Structures are given as C-alpha cells and as structure tokens.
Amino acid sequence: MSRALPKYNKRRVVVAGGAAAVVLSGAVIAGSALAGEGGNGGQATTRAAASPGTVNCPAVEPSLPEIPASAQAEVDRNLALLETQIAEANQRLIDTVGQGGPNFVQNAILGPLENKRVATLNRIETAVGRAAAKPEGLEALAPCELNG
Image 1 (cartoon, helix red, strand yellow):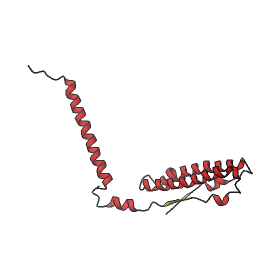
Image 2: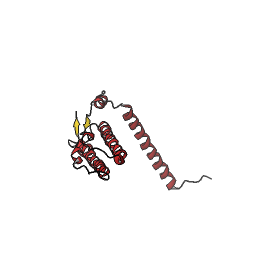
Image 3: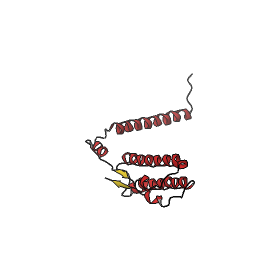
Image 4: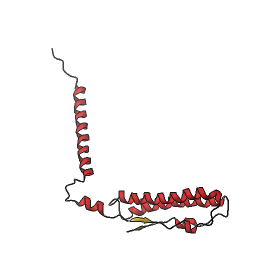
C-alpha cells in the first residue's frame, strides 16, 4: 500500500529547489564579477586602473595658535582624525569609481567629508578654548577638493 504525499510537500520541494537555483546562479554571477570575467574584452580592468584622483584639503596645523599643554593631546587626536578622514575619502573614491552621476563625488564624498571636518575643527577650537583664547574661523579649512 503506497501513500500519496500531501500537496504541500510537493510545493515545498519546488520552492526550495527554485530558491537553491537562484542562490547558485547569484553565486556564479558574483564569482565571475569578482574574478573580473565579464566577457567585455578587459574593459573592467581598464576602468579599475584609471585613477579616481585624490582629495586635497587645506593644512590645519599652520593655522593653529600655540596649543596649551593641557589641550595638546586632544588637539593631536583631532589632527590625526582629520588625516584619517582624508584617507577614508580617498579610499571611497577608489571604491566608487564610475558610480553615480556628475555630482556624485561632491554629494557622496566631498560634502560629507567637509561636514566631518567642520565637527573635528570645532572640537579643536573647543579644546584650545578651555585653556587659552579660542581660535576662530578654523571651519574655513573644512572644504576639500578633488585633484585629478
């Protein structure tokens, strides 16, 4: 005596099989893209090799007044953070080559970088201002531009 499988078991097998096929197809496509095998005659390699340029920001240290000893460590941390922000923006330029429209770099990289720099420069002003005359106008050093 054979038992017939209920209908829901058959559907589950079909759905699971379909899902597995989609996952495997995605893995093959992703693997090809990661390997650089797009069948485009090496154009992907050419695009990746093109230099996206670099971010150029004004130097902050020359514009700082004498830093009180009690604020030196905090100022140094924030100056290092400014350098880290530039390095991250440069990496983002590399990671997003060819993406977005004509304002992509300004809207996605330079604009947010300027906002981060304004906040960091304000922290430097505040740190110095706790022990000496607070420097004013460092925010003018926040905007950066793209070289290249």
